[in-house]
Image (cartoon, one colour):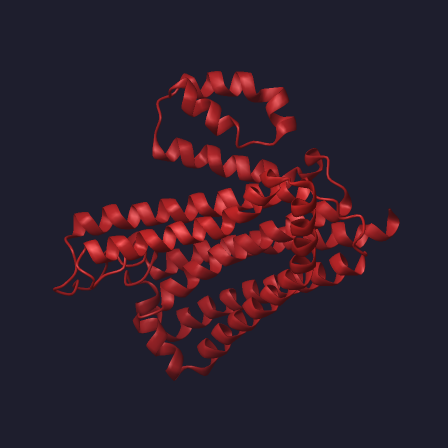
Length: 310
């Protein structure tokens, strides 16, 4: 791995971590060949370090709770998107209409997603408005740039998908859930190699956008002054978010259990999973991320509850 890539990967880790380990970590990366798996592992552990060591950001309890809320919500969004596309337009979606337990579990996940959005809006919008006013007053355009990263990442991904879909003939959208599987591709779809290539780019943009959004939002929050916001503005939404993400995780787990009971053959087929994996494997990935999001949200709620002891 070249030195430039090693430095950029090391820069993903928290500042305190870099102060202790960056030099030897860059040397370690430089001694090993580059590869998708290696880069993915480094990025994943960088996110873990940022989530598990929020105190190293030199943040107060308000900032810490808000950062953890953002991490939890972004993780829940990623898990929810994967779960939705794993089920949508597959025989499992049809099976839900014939089995009330499956449909009820799906509805539980949807309800949790709306509650999570409301909780994030309740905590985030007042803070965002205050930060925007502060940016305009102090001309801290670096903070404005960080706040704009999530919207820009989403826009870039959507534009890419639209452009790639049109280039491929307009009959197929390049998503990682529509590559191949136990089905015959429609006549208007591009060749399999093209589908793999374009879908991989989409996945890379989604992953990069998610990571960049998490890092940029955390940095923007760390640079903001939240001392004027009352404890209730953080405690109540953080508890609501933790509860709603837990509801989503419970709904997804229940959905998988009922799918195994009522639609096992479709559940283990390859007709909607991420990158042509089985629906079961893709569902399992969503479960893991939802449970991780729940743990992060609970930690954020505990941090917000500790505001009373400051």
